[in-house]
Length: 419
Ligand SMILES: *Cc1c(COP(=O)(O)O)cnc(C)c1O
Image (cartoon, rainbow, N blue to C red; front, side):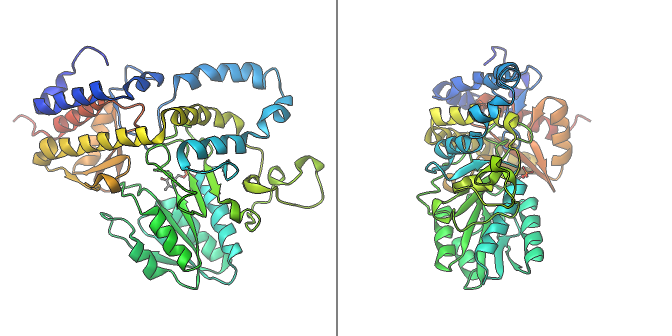
């Protein structure tokens, strides 16, 4: 931490500032913050749930990649390392963040495209079932994709409308699935409230009805512990540019449980997911294993930052990362109660840490203007319609004092202006 104390901290009760300093001093992961690119102009960054900060390791490695792997090895790098990268990196992500044994995770495409492929493959694998169960609080792309696949395949979407404050409950899923249900698609951590769904419980409910289940882990991977194999999950996708710091537009990951590999046929039959791409044969035959989810040439350059961050996540371990994440969100709640509530701010995220993900949403009617002002000051959370400030704290790159500074600026923005 820099030595100078930002004056804005005077706007918080002294014990809250002291608490942030104490949490930083006791934080076993504090030293990792220095691994990230930390420009002076960024006063506080609370949008790690939308775009994680880059690692210095990534910054330093990119030129070498251009010089050697690309510049010198040229096309030979495809044989030497790039062909295997989607599944090798998938295995690393699976190990580090998903609780997935090797051979079930692949890195390719965007989350949206992987969602499409998996939703389509899942309904095709359950031809006699006509319903996809999804929820109205899910991220727009997830809702649009199930709608589109339903239309395209003559299926119907049965929507759960959960209470945003409590998220989708297993009983609600039980009330919506049946012998007609091909697939249940849900997010594990809700993108607005950060509510954490009961992944294992809901998976079991879907399986009892004979349905497949597809989890979107975009707001979970790298923030919340996952045990996909243990929970018997069928399918999952997630972003790598959020808590996995893969960089803007980084390719996403998909998980397919081994038991489903032979059964699932994805809709974009491309040569790079072929069993023998360089045979250049007359017709498509899917590769063995999760490799079959690849369609075209994989975005190798875009995988480099994810590789660095996934390696760091594996080294630190998700239990320690989640433990810090819980302390960060708990600190935001404490500041919200003790310094922001009196300005009309309300908390729109769970108070029980067991069902709270890596971000906290704070509501106020003037929040859109507040966030615009914060951005001008180099304090960067994000705004979610209609009145939410989302404070997404990437555990390895965020300090408690950084959070205190950001929320002190919120107090400043909400203070009545002098007459
Ligand atoms: C961020 C996010 C996405 C984004 O999908 P892209 O294809 O990367 O734009 C999808 N689903 C959820 C739940 C998300 O949080």
